[in-house]
Image 1 (cartoon, rainbow, N blue to C red):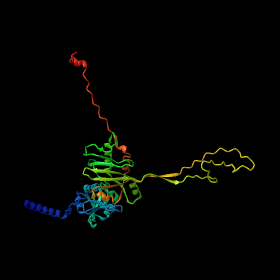
Image 2 (cartoon, rainbow, N blue to C red):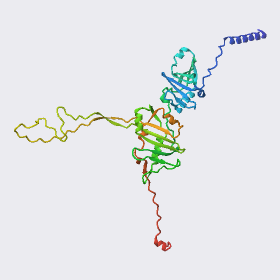
Image 3 (spheres, rainbow, N blue to C red):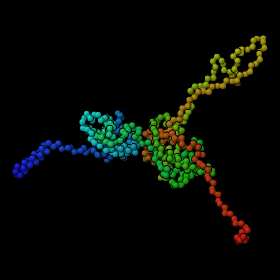
Image 4 (cartoon, helix red, strand yellow):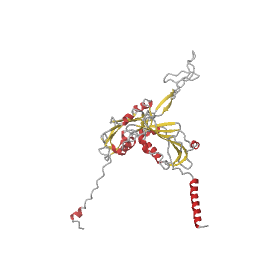
Length: 404
C-alpha cells in the first residue's frame, strides 16, 4: 500500500473514532446539589424571623420575639424564654452539615420517616419562612432531613433535640445578683429583731450595728445567703390565688438585698407549715355503763346500788383507778411548697412585672437554709493576740558592764 493511501485511511479512521465518541458518550453529569457540604441552618436567617415553631409528636411550641428583642414563651404565661437554651439549639442546628442528597424518589422519601418533627421560622403573621423536617436516624450516622415542601431527602450530620414542652423553654432565673454587687443584707426572724449586715466596699468585712456584745457577724454565713438568694430560680408556677400561695405569704421570711448602686430587692420566701389534723375523736364512753363523776371510781360489775333493807352495808370496796382517756387519732399534713415573691425598688424592673403573672415556686433548700435564729449569724470576736515580752538583762551583768 502506498504511503499516501495509508495516511488517508488513518485520517478517515480518526474521524470515525471522534464521531463515534461524540455519538456514544454518556450524557453530561448534572452539577452537584448546592446544599451538600453546607450548614443545615444559617443562623443569620433568625434575624429576619418573628417566631420559631418547634413540632414533635403532635405538639407545637412557639417562641416569639418581642419588639425589644427578647424571646418569650406565649403558651407558658408569656414568660421570658431561656436565651442560653435557645442559643444552644441554634448552635446545634448550625453545626450540622448536609452530607449528601439521598433521593428524589417519592417512594424512598416516604420511607425516610418525615412526619411531624420539624423546626420552622415564621413571620409576624405566622407564615413559614423556612422549614426543616427531621426524619429517621441514618444508618451511616446523622439524620435524614427535608427542606420546606421539596421532594428531596438529604442526610445530615445533625444531633439536635426538638423539645416541644413550653415549660422547659421558660427562663427560670428570678434574680441574678453577683455577691460582689451587694452592699447590704437584712434578714427577718420569727422572734427577735431583724439583722442588718453592711459593708462599704466589696472587699470589706461585713459589720452589723445591732450585734450582741462581744460578737461579730459571720461573714461566711452572709456569703452563703448571697450565693443562695442572689441567683434564685423557680421550679414551678401557680395561680397567685392558690391557697398554698396565700398561706406561704402569711408564713414567710423577708430578706432585703441592697446593691452598691442603691437598688433594693425585697424577697419574701415561705410556705404553709406542717400541721396535725384530728381525724377521729377519743372514745371516752363505755357501752352499758354510765361514766362516773369526776374523781369517783366506777362501781364493780357485781355491785348492787344499795344494801338490802334491815341489813348493814358490807365493807366498802377499794376505789378503782380512773380510766385513762384515749388519745385522739391525728394525721400529719406535710408542709406546702416554697414560694418566693420579689420586689425591686426600681419601678421599671422586669421582675416587678413578672411577679404579676404567676406565683413562683422555688426549691425547698432556699427556705430551709435560712438561719432560724439571730444567734446563727454571729460569732465571738476573737481575742487580740498576746504581746511578746522582751526578757530583761540580768542585773549583775548590767553592773559589771557585761564582764564575767
